[in-house]
Length: 505
Image 1: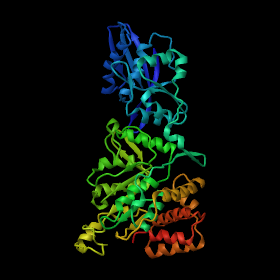
Image 2: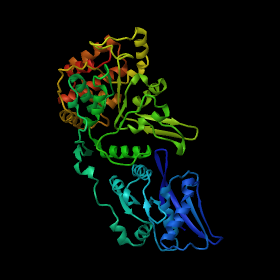
Image 3: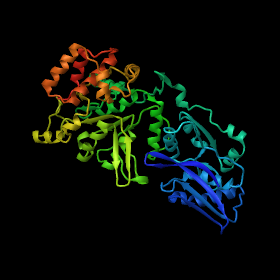
């Protein structure tokens, strides 16, 4: 009996699977046991064709392949390569050691990639050190970029057989190259980050709106949730779409996790310098936003795909009440838990939430040119769609100025990004585990140090506006980011006053 290692994905967690094979004297038959789902059972025909392509002669015996543990459901065509290797090398003096093998077989013996390979290996690498994996060559560059991993690439089943039969061939297959994105990486406090130098959408395109641009810098620097309100055409959506290009750089592990989430969502697994940006339509269903299903039918939702990036709700009040109220948990806890009878699936959801809305149903309430046609009842009903507890989780509120023909461009994205990077570096030098906008109560007390004047202003504002404990903490976090942009170690009076100016009244 021989064995090698593979793995299966259950929701967003990979589990190691031992693949065992044995030839038994009996009527010829090829069996795969161990709670293998349909995609694995179908692999028998692919494996037969691939082995025939290299002139392998099937023995007149029963071939039994077992996937251990037997009580864990397995799914995925990436088991093909490991099973075929066990069959082909069953009678050879070959030790598969602790190699993990992944790949789907073509009928001509080629080894192909699947969307599940990268998230599986990434999940394994987060729990096990010094993994050694054999993958299709088309996945090699991506997989090899995962830290503390030895990745080997093969193009065909014949190459994979030679890989295990000849140690010299094995050494030549080890990936040595560095991914193109990582060649321009920067180091801050001993950590590797991938900066973005692409400003495809530039804040220079937005005329005026100096207050809104400052709010965008603060939001980006500390990952603060932001709400823009203003008349149609004033630049709300334009500002938020450009926010992506001034965001702090992704850390290497964050970049890997974002790529893994994209593959779980069914997209091609690629590395990108830009953080994730998700903008679901207001007619989207609750499962599409938060994820749904159970076990192997579970699908990742928009809030998890936005992890480490931006989740943008345009036309904020038009989303369903169920979606809006369900948003409170991922905004507060940084995770979403999908509970079912047979499984519980937890996704990380630490993102910058950005929303845009009109001031009234017709949109002209703030306009000095057009008259608002909405009644007080209609405006009140429109505003009431966003509950107070949800608004309490939004850090920055900006009332956009009305656009004018004489407006000029003030800041461009490159200038804003320089300031954001400065504030980002200041936070990292304090050894914060999270950026300012995502700090917990303990971190707020440790890092949000106010001088006497700023403390007096905060206490007066708490009494005057009836601020909750969350509201006080929110003001401290915003003021901390403003101080970082100014290069100040402590929060001063001017920083607290500016933080108060972004509070929704």
